[in-house]
Amino acid sequence: AQTVTQSQPEMSVQEAETVTLSCTYDTSESDYYLFWYKQPPSRQMILVIRQEAYKQQNATENRFSVNFQKAAKSFSLKISDSQLGDAAMYFCATHDSTSGTYKYIFGTGTRLKVLA
Amino acid sequence: EPEVTQTPSHQVTQMGQEVILRCVPISNHLYFYWYRQILGQKVEFLVSFYNNEISEKSEIFDDQFSVERPDGSNFTLKIRSTKLEDSAMYFCASSAYRLNTGELFFGEGSRLTVL
Image 1 (cartoon, rainbow over the protein chains, first blue to last red):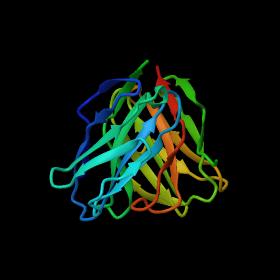
Image 2: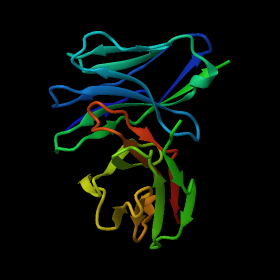
Image 3: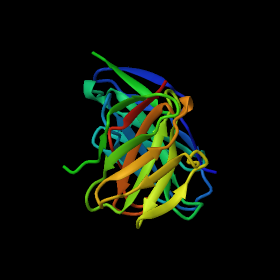
Image 4: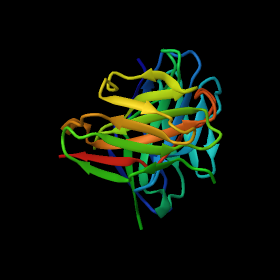
């Protein structure tokens, strides 16, 4: 079964600094996607960035980028120039289609605090 | 921007009572999901719904749970006889496509507290 592990329950970063959130996963899928979702306090989860496993190039969305290491099954999220609005729970996810339908499998999340 | 809406945002109920959590997915989406998150734990898949029937359900989704789409817009999760361990955040989500390519859009969640 697919699993997603986030080993950092909480991280802090100084405003304008860079922070990296870790995620490892295990999957039996031959082709798959990986996702980072952000959940601000009392708000819904929104997609931050998506990586297709067959693409070697790391995905980038403005200040957000990933370090995708396929062999190591590692998918970390780097946030550059951190802003106060980046404070949120961040969830790493992949999809599981082994049962014939698609669903997301999430990690336990990392709470990011941004210090002014 | 279209979004998934959920009601209520918070519900407190007594053990053994029935609860209905409501969701309005994005209007042109075809795939619907319920997830839950017990405090401090991971977000867990409960059930997926497509073409007016359940596509897949997890081991958590036992006989006390049911889903339906009564009127083509709402998507409800019913918990028939709540237990203390049902206390959690329940998230509704929808997608226009099967998830290997499509993005999953989440609601803000309904917090259920069972006393």
